[in-house]
Image (tube, rainbow, N blue to C red; front, side):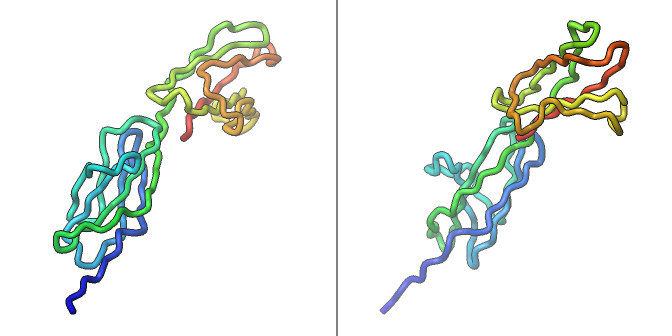
Length: 171
């Protein structure tokens, strides 16, 4: 009796954000595969890429957004089932330079731009009286706060003191 052995779908799918708008995807090769179809995990109906090697760089993506793929192998014209979905975020963009305003005797406000990060992007804000941030650092807004605003006030500061601040965005 003739029989057909089924072959596995690609495994070990991984992705690495290359920046704010691209992801490098890789997966384990399948023995005998002539090519691989890459599908968006959100709607795996039509492939977005066909590759002869187990890798693909996805370009022109949005900043700090999750992207997922599923992959199939093509062996002798037969397509495998879809792989397990894998999701990776593009990197968060560096926020714009913070601008101080409403500078008072012991307080001020800083405002920064999200710089193409989505409105759900959390920010961390640190302040120091040392420009290198080597000492005297306070982080009144930590990432765990999930602060998504782009302005904040600093109060109860020491009068006649110069302050420096860092703002960073994360996935």
